[in-house]
Image (cartoon, rainbow, N blue to C red; front, side, top):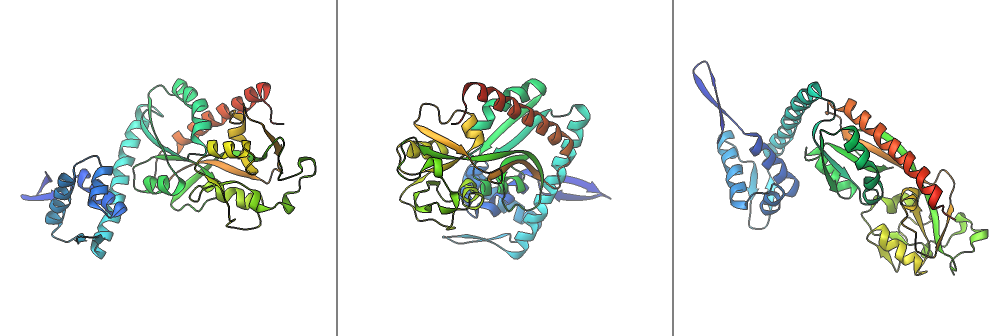
Length: 321
């Protein structure tokens, strides 16, 4: 159903917000089935909505073949404008929401998997206590995925780690997450009391698999010589990485946030804190077009306060060796 407005006696039909969202989803996935699934509708209903939009605009937005979906040049331009239109609608809702009460209503947050399990359990309780009318939706995903979701309007805010190339976003630093050298207490790969990172055999370093920003952070900030070390083992998450180190398959570098959250408890892993320069920056990120910067500043204060309390509490019960 198209929105019908009347101007000087003429009926003007406009695309619906649903159609614009579907168009953006199709541009992202370039596959009708996958795009429909991301919008939680059947493929037939999704396809009909795109066809109705093309009929309304009297243009062809995509070239359909049996193997691929390719946007026309005009279709890409319209999808870009559709994204801006949705941002404007969101800004309108944000203004109304902020007038009623700061940090209320729905907030969709994306967070990377090397931060989520260690940060969320400690900050969510405080956030709910301080902002009881805030309804949080959390999506965990790798940086490139949640960044795309943010730009597409599917998310409002990100919690991720820098350094990382990000376009069209505003950044607010939260805290520095320093790296610890992690090794089995009877490791065969290094001499702990005489450890020199500059002479480390990178073949002995265990890393996360490609696609995780933490892998790149370790390679760059911990001065691993090769940019793409050849490894016999790689892990899909930090928990698997810890198990590999505990099995003395190699040594690794674990973020302080994970260490303070107790990821090494019950293992035979020892740690050494590295130089302060070996760290990643945990930040909030949002679209430059967002009007919720004031709210995000308040949320940042809540998060940093929770992290400070976490570090103090953990140090009293568990201190890296």
